[in-house]
Amino acid sequence: MPNTIPARARPAMLTSRAVQARAADRDLVAAFVLLALLAATPLVLSAFGQEFWTDVVLRAMILAIAAASLNFLIGLGGLVSLGHAAFLGIGGYATGILADFDIDNGFIQLAAVLGASALFALVTGMVALRTKGVHFIMITLAFAQMVYFTMIGLRQFGGDDGLTINYTSMFGGFDLGRKDTLYYVVLAVLAVVMLGYARLRKSDFGLLLKAAKGNERRVSAVGFDPYRYRLAAYVVAGMTCALAGFLDANFTSFVTPGSMSWITSAELIFIVIVGGVATICGPIVGALVFLLIEEIMGGVTVYWHFWFGLFLIAIVLFARNGLVGLLTGGRR
Amino acid sequence: MSLALEVRDLNKFFGGLHATRNVSMAVPKGELHAVIGPNGAGKTTLISQLFGELRPNSGQVLVDGRDVTHRPVHERAGLGMARSFQITTLVRDLSVGENVILALLARRGHAGRFWRRVDRNAELQDAAGLALARIGMDPSHLPRRVSDLSHGEQRLLELAIALVGEPSLILLDEPMAGLGSEESRAMTRLLAQLKGKTTVLLVEHDMEAVFELADRLTVLVRGEVVAVGTPDQIRNDERVREAYLGEDA
Ligand SMILES: Nc1ncnc2c1ncn2[C@@H]1O[C@H](COP(=O)(O)OP(=O)(O)OP(=O)(O)O)[C@@H](O)[C@H]1O
Ligand SMILES: [Mg+2]
Image: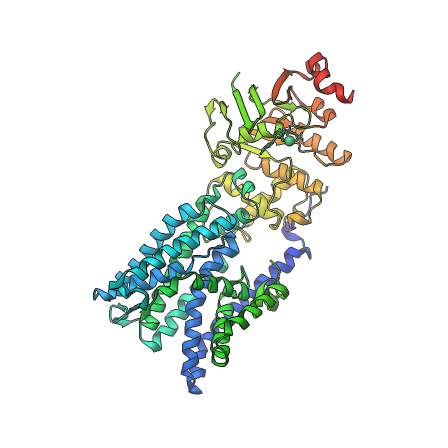
């Protein structure tokens, strides 16, 4: 075969790869547009006296941070955890328990949130990541249920009634719980998480995770230990999700064992799938849709989960890459 | 003469099946050593034990005089071993370039960076292009998805990836499996270029290619070594003719 023209001097071939690449670019552009819209949302909604909906969007953003951390595991690593909500609870309880001991220093709380979640991820990940497929799903579920029942049992921290958090986090003179600023703090964290994901998936680390998902044998054969990189991903995802729990504790001033039940974990998976696995915008789109359906259908019928289920089935059948895939025309 | 690979009394059982029977081998540095034998003789099982994907029940594997019997696959790769697979083993939903870059990153030992973009790294892309050029594939194939490649192209890509980073010991499991005669000849030429530069253990059914390429051969029948020698010695070995070559002669 002739080998004279350098590859990069040639026009890109119109392959499925090119189509995929353009879908990914649109996904990134959409992320910036969405973040800008989210920044304007409180102003617009308060102009119309709709502060209630600002809170819904804020909740969606917190949920989206948690979902994005799961999307990182599922989308890049192919690691479907059914216990991811445990990290939401760990973040919430680390904050709430410290506040219960009158420690409202945000720096200390944040260190506890990140430290506890990293440790939990490391220990459970070391076991869970030795398994594959349905075993991985069951083991992550089992670990999460252990924490869930532990918190139900701990009466001094509210048991199954949950724990009311009397002090929001103080960062020096800055009160994280202030409603007018919390929205923008959460938006900033969401932006970092979304753009961080966009970068990660094109990095060495992202390539390795994707390759290990596609063909583990190949990855070992070239000289990488897939386990080590998956564990790193698992810890990063767990810490990110715990951060969402920390923000949620400051938003609701409340944390319940329910935040880490398997149902919450399943909802996170719903959000990732509805939004679009392995996309940048999927988690926020999925979270917005999830909460809108809950708010709107929840007001009409107590069976809203039924309608959400139907919606999920439709998405899985007709839009294999979720709503974002539908909009950007990408394929997985 | 120092040995690139030494195998001592290797045994592997699959339940009651004795798939590797007291196999011992000594392959000097720079030799192209072929392993031949009928279907089910245990050739792939042997390679998998040499590379660490299967644990032997007993015996030892030494690479460059170092005992690697209990080392995991990725560490053996780090010691300069590479293998290709009888059944193509590539990441099918990634591009050709990404598959090659994966190997480049591993060989250079500085992967796992969170922030460096591999897709825009000109140096990595160029190195990947060079890796393809070595097996006569044009760099314009880099952005193609592996699943869009022909079978022959995938076999070549496996070889290209095995060659990344100049491994000192390459285990090739039927690189010509499923190739047309033209493609087989091209592959034979590529393997001939490796001779003397690196140590190669070649498992192959294409006898024409094997006898043309090999410095020495080991004949495996039902998990057991029945003969070792130069192509001429093997061709004239009575037991080999009986056990193996006789079948198609
Ligand atoms: N994982 C396994 N579990 C059980 N038996 C196995 C396993 N792998 C291989 N075998 C058996 O071990 C024997 C040797 O198989 P192997 O694949 O090593 O042969 P081979 O020489 O590579 O054959 P071929 O030329 O067809 O590739 C065969 O009888 C095979 O059925
Ligand atoms: Mg075989």
